[in-house]
Amino acid sequence: MADTNASPPGGAPPSDGGGAALPGNGWRKEYWKKNLRLMVALLIVWFAVSFGAGILFVEQLNEIVIGGFPLGFWFAQQGSIYTFILLILIYALRMDRLDDEYGVSERNDDGSRS
Image (cartoon, rainbow, N blue to C red; front, side, top):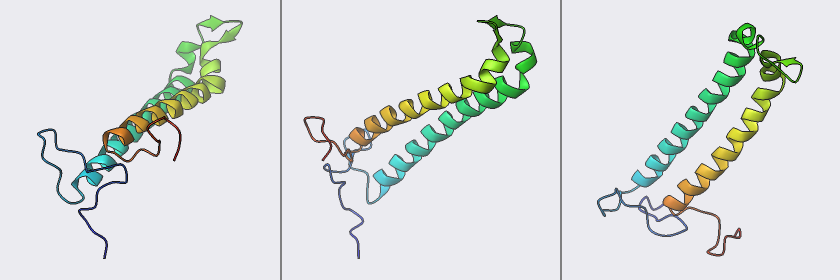
């Protein structure tokens, strides 16, 4: 049977902010909650850009022309893709920080992968 008080591979479970270690799987639940919150926030941004700018507000945005192309057309064709790539980068960077915070990072002290 698995030990529910096991520490993450990178060290002891994180504290609750007051110095006391979170009991059992508490740190795992908190880690997952923060991960889900980040994913939902980024997906909302992606939805707002791709659906909002590419579909809902396309006519208003098409009144703005940049480089000979209507802005609404650009968002529908390219903007949502660029936004998605940027959100992937943001997710990777934020998850690296979250992994470091909870001691589950897959990097060594020199920054290389283990």
